[in-house]
Amino acid sequence: MSFSEKYSDTVQRNDSFVCVGLDPDPAKLPEHLKGKSNPTLAFLKEIIAATRDIACAYKPNFAFFGTQGIAGWEALQGAIHTIPNNMPIILDFKAGDIGNTAEHYAYMAYCQLGVDAATVNPLMGTDAIAPFLAYQNGCAFLLCLTSNPGSADILRLNTDQGVLYEVLAQKAVEWSEIGPCGLVVGATHPNDLKIIRAIATDLPILLPGVGTQGGQTSVQNGLDNKDSGVLVNSSRSILYASSGPDFADAARQSAEDLRQVLNKVRSKR
Image (tube, rainbow, N blue to C red):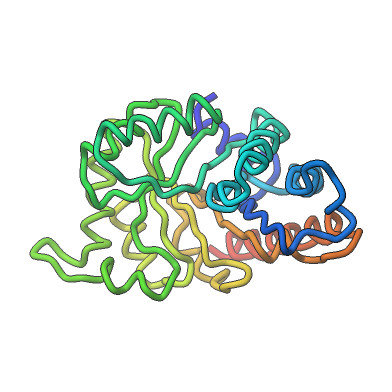
């Protein structure tokens, strides 16, 4: 199944736009897991088991695994294998490099790890993202207007074609003719999100900035004309809803609370 097919099926099956971000910080893991041979993997297995009927996707953040060396790579592979095959997985590593290097990034994501999508920095242009677009069953989520405050330093610059984030949204529409792509837009920018959705009417949009950073009410501006097309990422507020033995139950409740909020927003559209 392609990313698009998995996404559509899972949204309908689980009635959810909740994308669970997997950002495992060893310092925040419950104490009772720290004696395990791979505490990170043990933690994520329980998180996934508790949320797989609530989420529409999972988004492992490569940096949180990379800092743990070989154990982190094993945890990443193990977590990916734990996620049901019919659910989409987005590798968050914001790759962006020259074509030859990008080919290896894309191969690692799609062939070595077996994910369904990846986040990609488009600022180096067509040849840097083409290796990701070549995987026709995948989806390259291109950074457009991220949720961090510093995004304004670059992504709000004015160009002779418009504000840079608008230019990137338009380029994503053009690149989608080559291969599947989407956009990463912070839910903390509701007005800009509405502008971006008007440009990229059919592309999926990954929305970070919900949960710990807030921004749930902006989701309606990201919905497409089918009242779908968004993946609302929440990481810390789900993963670390509790630091005790009940962490999986607390994570499930946090994910369910977010699902209900998002579905209310959807119903008011």
